[in-house]
Length: 379
Image (tube, rainbow, N blue to C red; front, top):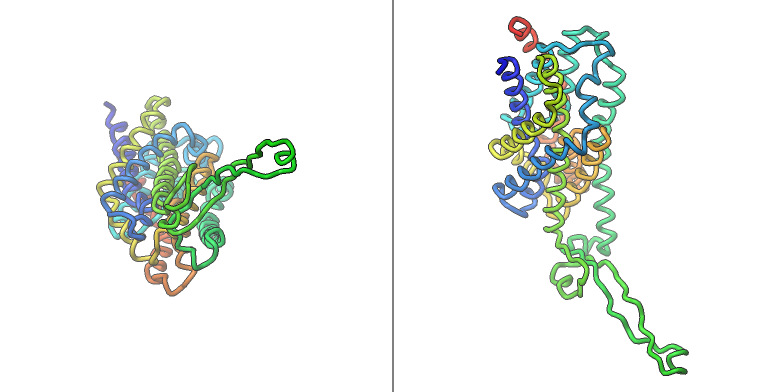
């Protein structure tokens, strides 16, 4: 096997691994933080759905590949192998450093920073498509955490209203119930001796679990724990589908530059999905602990809402090719939970997270440039 291609595969698996280690927390932190389950069970759940999401990205999120491949380079710019590999390595090293310190950072931001730094160094300012970077990548990344925060607050208020007020906000069960048919006395039935029957009616009941158990939930019954597990899996699936195409795009650019088969995309998705799963399971607990325990106290109702908002934003965004950072969206949603009572927020942890977000772009760019200078001597 070509040594350059082997190095490329190693770098691809590396960035997928550190992405899994840092980002699995975004789907499962609320399960742990709200006391729904243990770290081990949450990690198994998040790892499985992350892998499925990564594989699904090949079918559902192909639109995300182009912006993170050659889409950010100016027309006519031909990627070099050294620059392509340095871009992967720069982003991966920064995410690895952040993961080691327990900071939830955005792999997407790290990739963008590394692309910008290495691209400018390798191709010059004119070789980079700055308009595409601003409109297609930077703007969605900038706005998404604020949308998540506001969406979480709005959904919490809607949940309160649906459950019948603040005193029932902690209701544990949502049921779709059926009211059985009733015999009706109508003019025709009295006159003609016939019997009229009312139609079956359905309704939604939100109540404590012991009350909901007494309802005839002939259609559907979910406890909030069930819903929380579902939205956690949905968030992990969405984040796998969102992140895998970005890393695959980097691998494909480097692969073409190394002379590899341009049809390697399916293999790249499989390798990235496996790398994300390995990182999630083996090294995901450190960052999960920060988001679960050090940002804000939460109960399982609030955790469900935060995951619902994250999955609803990141999944469709991936399918439509709109880059979002699962880190920023999920963190924005969790901060939205604490914003209901600012005293619940751990402002020290929130400040550290925001500082890490700000530092990610220049740090990944600097690492990418340094690695590019080294690789230029060997590749």
